[in-house]
Length: 430
Figure 1 (cartoon, rainbow, N blue to C red):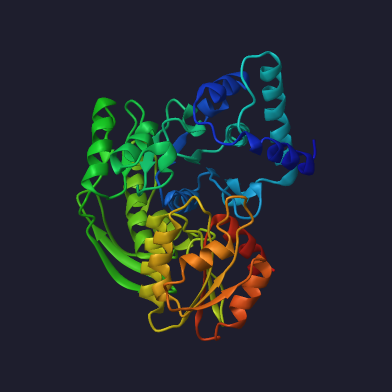
Figure 2: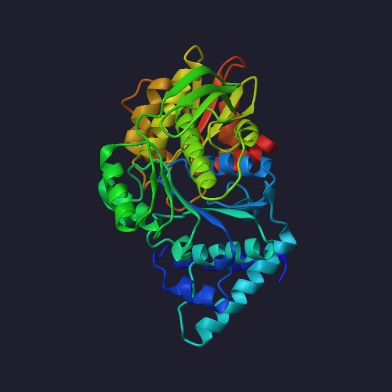
């Protein structure tokens, strides 16, 4: 199997959709010799902030000299992005090899009638476990795909640490319609006697997670009063101090933009504390260097100047709220052009209410996805807003149009579906 064949196989099983549960993936991993049990795993769940936290913590561990695997989803441009070791993506031939190994196990199990065909996420998660085990990484940062309790990544039995980032309303059809229900599903990654780090958030989430940790004798690292003092914050980055019951640091430099990234960084600092408490070695020099080097593509990312072009893949209410806050903080003195394309199964009306008041112009386009909210419907949705509006279904033409109507001293913000951001990322790189 070559790289092209591997991608065709992955695409061929997309039609199976999402089917949460652990039965198939457990059988599949047993067939493959349970490679996930040979890796020190840091399991990361949450609604927003998982990828950013993985980037920060992986860079800290890399600075410390560890060999660090990271498994994240979704990707922006290519599947290789989902599998990195010390920030280097898996090579095409290696990905093809791993797909071939997993496909062979799937085919045998299906032929024997032991399982139905695993879903695409189960397959690519099995690839991750086998690849990182073969590469003998020191740590694997394992990002949950959807929820936690019944997510394919939760086939692991004994992670060394569980991290739960910001929890908000998203994927309610799978996870429930209130924060307690969603937190319960995310908290499903918590294992017996395994330490847990929880992002500072509301009492409803905290009480749900706390109950699970008590039931499973898992030490909880959490502080509602984080003790953060922002020293400097602009588009060049953030400098902040932090002092709370667990830790004290002065003048941490953070490359990622946005108030929410400071809170994510505080969560990562708690994770470093938990890891050190449980036998790892992470010194302050590695922490400072790791934060400064951390990057996360497609999240409040500046990809061009004059005009400044920002890509942000916020695709739920909490994420859009964070984006709106960041635009007001960094660009209150600029005119903002908004290029937007969203999926129809998201809370698009609330997203628009948050973003449109910040824009002087808006370009409407459509993500390359069957669930897209088409331009005509989107035009009707924004009709009550007094903003100069342009329409272009083709993403490349929409991007060129948006840049052409944005003065070089102003800002073009591209937001909405990650499918849209992925396409725009290719164009920006071009």
